[in-house]
Length: 328
Image 1 (cartoon, rainbow, N blue to C red):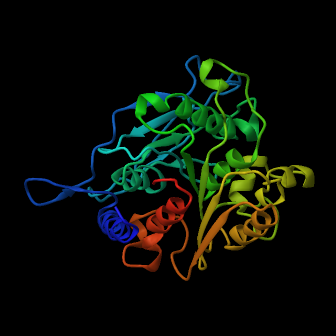
Image 2 (tube, rainbow, N blue to C red):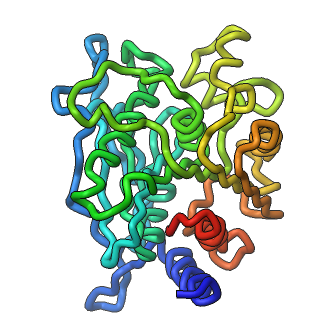
């Protein structure tokens, strides 16, 4: 398939997603209902997540949508992290770990997880949506608890590449908002944040490609998303701790290629989060592409930008990845 045809097909898929929150199904009375969730689930930690002795929260997954055509759920107080698997009809040889945002307060499952996974699975990428633990829930690792889950997820995905039929060196990570911060940490940190639990932990824990959607990049004023910082680092983190978790202050040399996208009118996570990180990536000679859209706001995923310029972002990602010999 040449790039022009790929782009046209991708735009059509985005338009469908934008209208219905994925590919909504029509029922007998002419109404539309959201597509069913995948049934294939992978538990990250076979013997329980590490450092949970002080955890007393009870998981919840509230539904915010009142429209049967789409879901808008978020996972809060997660204690048993999982991957939800979206298998493509015709695998293209790549995989993607999707990390939705939620300000480190919760993880929005549909808007930045399942909806986006369906778009990339439609073009052949095997997608895994991460439901991760949150740093303020009492885990011994604190701010590194979500990163433990992301690192373990990448290792599990890579260790099962043959089972799913993709190249173990073609694993992308896509993170949105605070999930973009977590995806960034997974891309830049080289240290394992947990003790190995099985043979899967011998695999590399870093992705081969990184996509950051309107990411929470900095933990520093004046551009920090204050809620994400509070839920990750507490009310009054030290300057050293802020620097240690600010992506633009980290060493990115030798990291995988990065794609950045952000809306200029983002009132929740200022576009300077991406701009500062872009400067760091350029200085570190990381292969990077960035797209800034005049409008789109924050948290748009794919459904909320139908008819707006930003709706083309999945195809911009695909075209960029194709130039890197990475099918998405």
